[in-house]
Length: 257
Image (tube, rainbow, N blue to C red; front, top):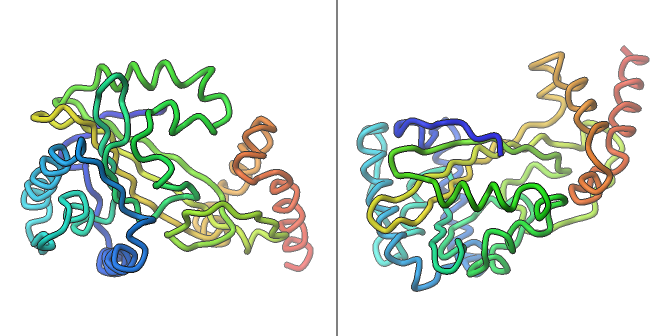
């Protein structure tokens, strides 16, 4: 799962895009609420605890930031409007399932189809999940303790830099300028009172041009990752043929340099 231990003061990340991203969240909640917000009564208590912990964390780590919850909103929406991260709450019954979420910046997945479903159902479309990841993922959730939290990174390539991307599209760009490197910093933290697990997702996007300018090793490393990915993963991610497209674009750029 690629998890690393996380200190409490590393839970949220703040940068210069905060005002812009929070304004976009507010707009999406007002205009596309049925797409970006989903709650159940079973997740209400944990959402209230999450809001309290979010306020406590911001007061301790970013005291200069405003932190007035939006009146009249569900607590998970109130918490989400204070941070750049998307927020999900999972609770335990017969299995761990998604009980509340505010996800304004999805990487082409539909929140409304996931609410109320188990970890295994949420991840079942992922190639190899049932065979290799289902058991360790569920075991990790069972062992997670409020005293120890974790983070991980997940990346993908998309043909659109927009943060809000709930729908899968057929991407067929023929140049590296048409692709964007999208990274999710994900955290997992167990709430001490309700025992729910909070899953946060902070999304960063940069064009491949920007990434190759920053680091000369980026493109060779990306191509090696694409070359080694199983065909099922390439198909699931929409990456089939992308390595060839990127190599062709690089060769053209070298010839014209």
